[in-house]
Picture 1 (spheres, one colour):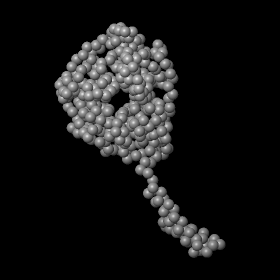
Picture 2: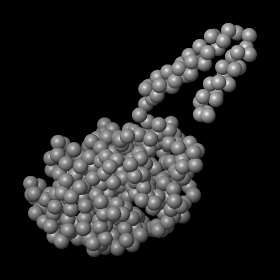
Picture 3: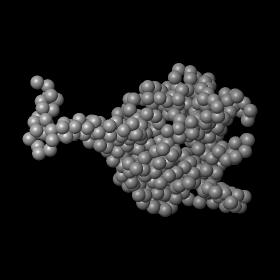
Picture 4: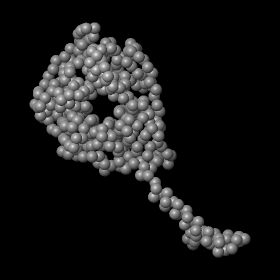
Length: 390
């Protein structure tokens, strides 16, 4: 006999034994289930698209499953398991695992919803930099790492492969160092040109010496690019400086800032624009109380020698393939690939600004735009990301 029929018969028998009339009991058996079903359907209809994430063993974990990523895409990272992570400037952190997308925000323990950087912590977890602090994520929960302020005391530190350099809020914070255990906040020493800059710009609303980018070169030196005062190299003993106006200020006006420093496979440095690349000496020279970097310039991309040249552009991000191919995020000029002496351009169009370029483990190209979402390179075309892109 079907279970449902038996259950109904048992309820009717119970109703017969009750002191209340049988008709009342039968009506209750019909109306109450209908009422429960109606309430369930109403709640389901009002349920938002996002739903809590659930681990495979049935235990709830932080985050909500959503149908798409935020349009404020900024930084991309692929972890050792092949999972993609996207940082957005207002909507937090996204985990992209196959066709499932999970969104994490401050409500889940993330330090802030303005995510500016994602990297591995060296132990299988993630470090997520935000304008409100640094979060460490172990896959189940977020923990906030409070910085220990070392001030301008760099004497106990030496560059090393296990150090992870971080910027919490580009151009607004000091550089930070994660040593595997604690987060250290440091202050760059006085910068050449700082006082002159303040005299010329008394009401500027940002820190001209704020750090925009950090790059560790193949010799272990650490490079810091600032908002308006150029770059410096720290070799573990001293700081040496570089300032060229065209690296900071585009010909059309405004302040681009020193957003990108990258050493290529040949040991040449690409800094901010495509006109030249730099060859740096290990030595420096003293000038007006500061150490200045010693370097030579070489041509950068072909046909980039003048401001109106076809291949002259500023870039905010660089990636390189094992074969030496360079990928440049060139703002509204799109993403450029430089390989075998040739430049290939992939345009997004409609004023979309390519802010970040990232090459994953499968040699796919990803682009964060800051305001227009996440893109990926499909053959010759940059397309908006969707869950079926992978």
